[in-house]
Amino acid sequence: MFLTKSFKKGLNGLILSILVAAFLAAPSIFGKNLYWFDRPLAPLEFSVNAQTPAEVEAQQKNNQQPQNSGEETKNSQQDKSVESKGEEQGLDIFKIITGALAGLVLFLYGVTRMAEGLEAIAGDRAKGLISKFTTNRYAGVATGTVATTILDSSSVTIIIVIAMVSAGLLSFVESLGVVLGSNIGTTIGAQIVAFKISEYAPIAMFVGLLLILLGKKERWKQIGLVILGFGLLFFGLDTIETAMEPFKDYKPFMKWMETLGNNTLLGAGVGALFTVLVQSSSATVAIIVTLASQGLVSLPAGVALMLGAEVGTCADTLVATFGRDRPALRTGVFHLLFNLVCAALGVLFASQLAVFAQWFSQLMGAGDDIARQIANAQLIFNILGVILALAFLPWIARGLERLIPDRQNQNRQPERVKG
Image 1 (cartoon, one colour):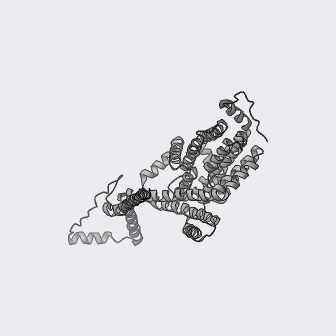
Image 2 (cartoon, helix red, strand yellow):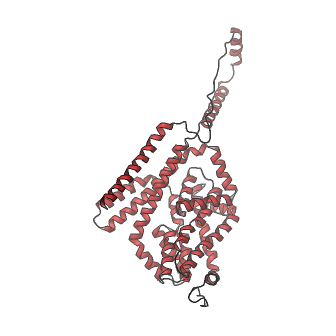
Image 3 (cartoon, helix red, strand yellow):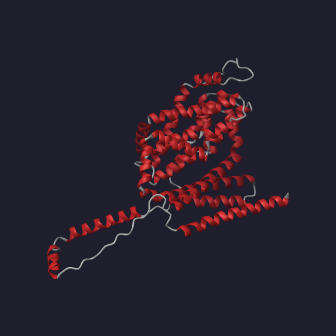
């Protein structure tokens, strides 16, 4: 068995080495000849024609004009030549894709490590917080907001809630407020990303690594894991930002972003699909905010993608309900229906949401910062959705209990929502 494990480790190391070597060697092999969208145009050729002395004298007379106009003409010609040169250059798609993938891997790895560290440090406390402070729906919303902020993941909070409902530690009705609060807590991450603190990521990574290596107690190691994950998160976003920068001058990409902004339903679908792939709405919104800070994503497109991310995040919570009893299943279905209804309303009123987020950002002193406006749009959207759901929560709970009754006693009276 020991030899088998050693062989597997050696084989995995060999495969990883081959992949790394391939990624390192590929750019030098392909160089700048890999154009997937545009092929570079042939270089322009200029020819100088010989002139007679009479033509030279006539040209000198015509050149007796103000020098300023000549300089302006020369500068405009230079600007046009620079623009045409930039349009002629093709995009190195291989370099962009590998850079974006590397940043995405670092980002998701940082999120995973940070979530593991936070769950190890505050997981039991979060469970205790959820079980104690859910006496009514308003306390449940506050508890879900705080727990999601601590754990930095709405999915983790909802999965913990589903497990607690399945174990009988929390009732279905008590869990509804926590689910609503988790949607507000997940907006904190986008607000932090919009502050553009990625330049301090290497410091956080170094401090976290020191705590992991030198920490004597397990608690210090877990704290170091959280700090390391935090640094990797922002370092990955910075890597994605650098990799995607060439798209700023690429008209097809900008036109596609404009299409997503004009077609909110299409943008929401793209955001939902990407969220299902990365298994994190926080990751999707963080990437959207990062690209918006570089001018790659407009406010309408960012709002559309954000609405889709709210729906895509329901995938992992639905998976967590598999094999659970009926109360836990009702909690997962409530999360899905709540996000679907809110996203549908958001698609209908996307332009109004964008205008309101722009006004709110200017009121808070953010000015025309698109990244801040998208983060504020997510915050406003989730708060309004929670307020709307709280007003109808008793009827929603009764409807779900009738739609998904308990197996043992299907004639049992529905629970009443407190508060």
